[in-house]
Image (cartoon, rainbow, N blue to C red; front, side, top):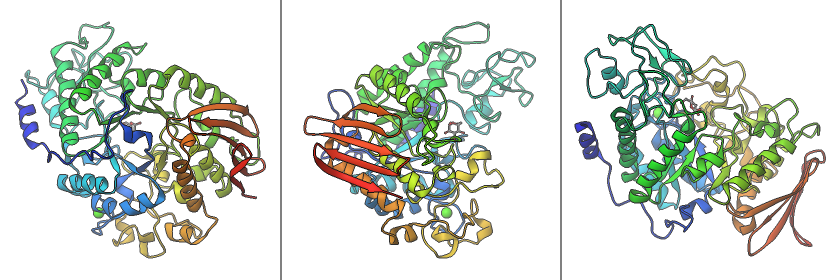
Amino acid sequence: MLDVRAKMAKKSGKKGERFNPAIDSVSKAGLPDWLKEAVFYEIYPQSFKDTNGDGIGDIPGIIEKLDYIKELGCNALWLNPCFDSPFGDAGYDVADYYKVAPRYGTNEDLFRLFREAHKREMHVLLDLVPGHTAITHPWFQASMKAERNEFTDRYIWTDNIWTSPKDNACIRGISDRDGSAVTNFFSHQPALNYGYYEITESWQQPMDAPGPRATLEAMKDVMRFWLSGGCDGFRVDMAGSLVKGDPEGKGIQLLWEDVRAFLNKEFPHAAMISEWGEPDRSLQAGFHMDFLLHFGPSHYNDLFRCEEPYFSSRGKGDVKEFVARYLSNYEKTGGKGLICIPSGNHDMDRLARYLTEAESKLAMAFLYTMPGAPFLYYGDEIGMNYVEGLVSKEGGYNRTGSRTPMQWDDTANAGFSAGSPASLYLPIDPSATRPTVKNQAERADSLYHFVKKMIALRKEHPALGNTAGITFTEVSYPLCYERFCDEERLTVTIDPKALTVEIRDGEKTVLSECFR
Ligand code: GLC
Ligand code: CA
């Protein structure tokens, strides 16, 4: 089949600029070495920095701000999807996996971002959305046709329009093809066909049928294209849900093991992080890292985003269930990879919606002293607000308030864009006291300076590193834990009620802060 694949291979990016041998090697355990030191910064490209005045952030804007990110202490980026899309879900509805959305620039701009990042010893992860596409994707357009073609089985269709799938939503009535197409998230995101682990209906295909196999190969081609072009790996969207009819996750495990074998062979340095939220499964399946997130049984938001977050100085929160859950994952993953706890992301409320600046400092003290690679959502370093009352933008709904333009300084549009205010992707936070990089940098006791200090401390102390160990010694108010490696053993004490954080190396004080 796929002459398409051959065509795609030809489109492939520039080769040979991917690795810097000084920083890129793979440990025996299979973890690319750079991940051991990685501190990530997540960029929602729409809202970071606009360089051509059209009101939308772009890739040249990200390049312009690389030095800012590096100075903060972050040495790796995760970019939300930046591919061609009708933007019904902010780009998580891809229309062309091989093309940068024109509003962000060109493929060449993205390749240049990789090169500029590498020059600064930084790495870049792209967002891979393997589970579904936009309706406008040519694969789906072909799959909707009544006559059989190469893409008929690229998506999951029931065998007639009146049959809907039992366990998933579907789109129907928009094609000549007689059938309903399974959807994943929004109803305009048809699910790609990776097959069913357990077949219960005649229209379902096993994972090793030609259609599902071709889908997986097509996705490997996408990965190949960007990895050859200089990208350092992927954050994988909804990674745990590609295989259907798979209640115990056995099929999805097999699928990612297959991808792992491909990467080991062709791109052993590529880093893979899953949006899955079950590190015991994802790391076994060959991911290097998984997130603990706001969904699933993680209790992540007990700490940051609930009525009484643990880090609130009211002291009414609870950290026990989070720690129990964290430890059980930590033990199960047995040093196989990293469990990452982000400050937030494009899907959740900003930290500042629940925590004061002082409380956010405690949350940051926690995030930068935990194992796993830290992930900072753009703007969290200055305490950007969740902007209330916005009309949904590009499928953002309640998430829209966490996706507003980065606030750089006190010039027009907070330095985000030279465009007219009406042209901006989203309005700038209207608050008179909104934080900016400038006003935070000018104030010595700001959140920005504290985050910077914590990242620097993490780098100075191997015991605070991504792969160093952890033991919890007190799990209430305060929270105490030890971090250790061969070289040192540190004790971290965070007391939200007293608004204090202390890090000690035996008798020696490494950090002692009170934010009252
Ligand atoms: C993930 C993304 C989210 C997106 C969804 C569907 O959860 O983080 O933003 O809407 O997947 O792709
Ligand atoms: Ca722009």
